[in-house]
Image (cartoon, rainbow, N blue to C red):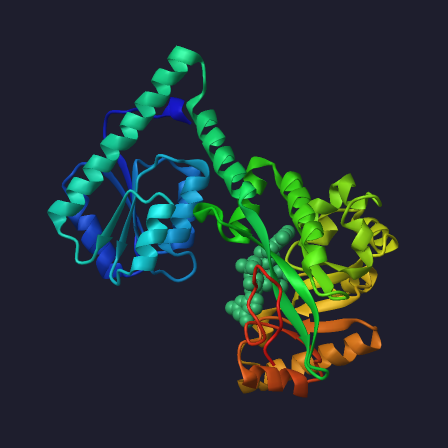
Length: 389
Ligand code: C2E
Ligand code: CA
Ligand code: CA
C-alpha cells in the first residue's frame, strides 16, 4: 500500500464520535486545514473504512456503543504500527489512559479539546506518519527490506513475546447440589499488556497464520498444569476450530492425551462447523482418544440442532447471554428449563456460564441446572483453588 501513497499533498483524517455534536465540533475544527476529512458516528463503520482506505491520522472518541475507541486502536495496531491514533474522552480515567498507552495511542486528549490543540496534534501526527513512511522507503531502498513486511515482523515479535508470557488461569465449575468442584475451565492469559486477553491473542495468531502454533502451546500449558489440579477434577479446555485440523491433536502419545479421560474439549457454537467438512469425523477421533466434547456458547451461535445432534456432545455450555438476569426474565427461564430437560434426555450435561449473582444461581437451579460456572463461585485464577458456595 505504501506505493500508492504520497508523503505530500492533502492528508486524510478520520474522525469518529457517536455523539453528533462532538463529531461536528471535530469536523469544524479541522475544516479550514485543507485535509480530507471523513467523519463517522458508527465505530463499526469506521473499522470497515480503516480496512479499505488509507488515513494519515485517526481521531476517535473512547466510549462508544459496540466497538469502543480502545478496541478500534487495537485493530489498527494489528496491521499498522505507525498510524497515529488520537483518543479523545469526556471521562478520563487512569485505566483507559494506561490501556491507550499500551495499545500505542499517539495522544490521549480530554474533552473539551481546544481547536488549536486539536489542529496541532493532528498536524503533528500527519507529519510523524509521513516521516515513518519516508523511513520505511529509505530502508527499502537501502536494504531491500519491505517496510510493511517489517511491520509484520514487529507484530510477530509482539506475538512471540505474548506467547512466551502466556499461562493458564483456571475457573471452577461447581456442582451446586453436592457443593463440590466438578472441574475447572482453562482460560489463556498473557502477561504481555498488548495481548493480555485471550481473544486478542487468538485474533493476532489468526492474522499471522500462527493459530496452530498457538493451539499447540496452549495445550502444552494445560497438560503441564494438570498435575497441579486437585486429583480427579475435570479439565475443560477451549480449542479453536482450526485446531481440529492439526494432526498433533490426535497424537495418542501427546502429554494431553495421557490425561484424556479428565479432559473436556470445548468447541464454540459461534464458529460454523459446517465450514470444515470432516469436523465431525475429527470430533469422533477425539472421543475415541478418550476426550469428552462440549459445545460452548450454546444460545449465542448459529449451529443448528442437526449439528448438535450429530456431534452428540457430552456437555452443553450455556452462553452467559442467556444467564444474565435470568431471575428477572421469564422467557430466559423457560428456554433454560427446556434446554436442561432436553439435554437430560440426550444424556448431555448442562453448564450455564457467567453466573454472577445468587438470584441468577437460584433461578438456574430452579430451572433444573446442577453444574454452574461464574464469578459467583470463583474467578479464573493462576492457582486453581476452592470455590465459594
Ligand atoms: P469462553 O470459552 O466462553 O470463556 C468464558 C469467558 O467468560 C472467560 O473469558 C471467563 O473469564 C469469563 N467469565 C467467567 N465467569 C464469568 C462471569 O461470572 N461473568 C463474566 N462477565 N465473565 C465471566 P476470557 O477468559 O476472557 O476468555 C474469552 C474467550 O477466549 C473464551 O470464551 C474462549 O472463547 C477464548 N479462550 C480463552 N482461553 C482459550 C484457550 O486456551 N484456547 C482457545 N482456543 N480459546 C480460548
Ligand atoms: Ca469455553
Ligand atoms: Ca462460553
